Length: 152
Image (cartoon, rainbow, N blue to C red; front, top):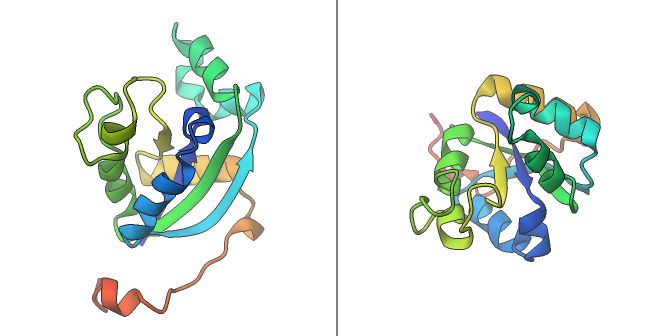
């Protein structure tokens, strides 16, 4: 079982795609165990994108992520990090396959609707930026036996 951070970026919020995107995760059998809407501050952006702060594209990245509210989610499931990233598709909506979130809804490299952790280490670091331990609502849906085997 893995847990990942997923951010619905300002373009997803402003384009009113939140419900459609969340529905894709739920339809895949993933669980949302924490969720909140917030405004990313410049300080939080610098922490979240720490590896990019010195890169020439960072000012545009920060300007975009602080431009409107986002929705932060902790999403959990079997091999969740890989499953989520496959649901998202390639970083650029122009290169993402049809049927993926970005392939269906994005036509930009930067305005690509969603961020998701790329490793367990990144997920742990990123989840700590957006959530307190008390924000998580762990549960096992009653439907679990019909969407995954007992030994998974």
